[in-house]
Image (cartoon, rainbow, N blue to C red; front, side, top):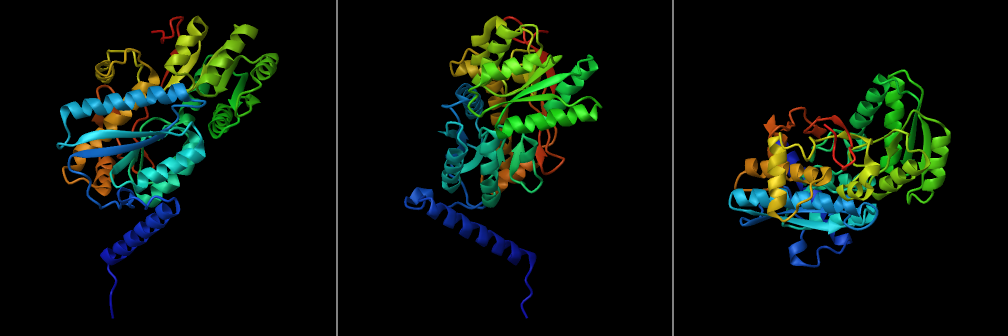
Length: 396
């Protein structure tokens, strides 16, 4: 009689996972080249360099956000390389997906099958990450800071995923609570018909119900944002006390322009991902008065040590413009670099995942990262509200 021990069960589970990964990679045509074998969580990484994979939209609807995010990631990893982590150079392998979910999935399949990629970081988009996370879970590859605050992505079974930012639900609740405290209870939500937009509307509706206030009036844009003038006209005609925007990137700037033209006195509020630094510069004075939720300190507030470090890292690469999105990329890179430091010299995906899960009250310089609560791992609950001034920077 053979008694199957826990170690035997674990070995069989690992064999099944690695076999499944091989099939997935083979079906995608990824095993044709020797460097593209399926890699397991226990396989040792290259001793001289470590590659971090990312799929994000540097073209397409959210190109400005994607480019700024990538700049911040590059700055964070360059700073880590200057200090050194167990003699390895960190390399960022960023693949453009045009903010298309199917392309994101294809990119991540390739990154997971690449024997040199130890981790993923900051893949962009709610719908994109909905397709990515099952692949991450199957491969058990560490994944730091999905670039989405969607609560639907924060599931306890995803034990290889380490969120950094607070959620969109947290942001929606904070915005709704602040408006209600000011006596502003008749709200309208203009949202894009995307996974992000629909979830934002649901979060605001739930927050208003919790505050025993009327549900917001909802006005839907199609996924391409083609009917902005019509939607803005309908929202203004509903005479809300304030309008919340469930949009991100260039379409948000287009909406702001239209609202300022049709009804410049209508208060506007949005989430942390609503506007890129480029969008704010293009809007100029039209951005004045917009309220934004913030999941990190203001990227211009140098009273925070982490902001000073970020600006120094950006300047070292020749970037002179600072934005919330590049700052978030920088912070995400810092969190992953901390995990690499803790994982030690004999690096594997499994050791990195365990090292990240062990981070407790890690102060980056005014921003604490802590994964003590377990899965779903969320490192920061930082939330603040800011109001844009005429110069495109937060007031106060």
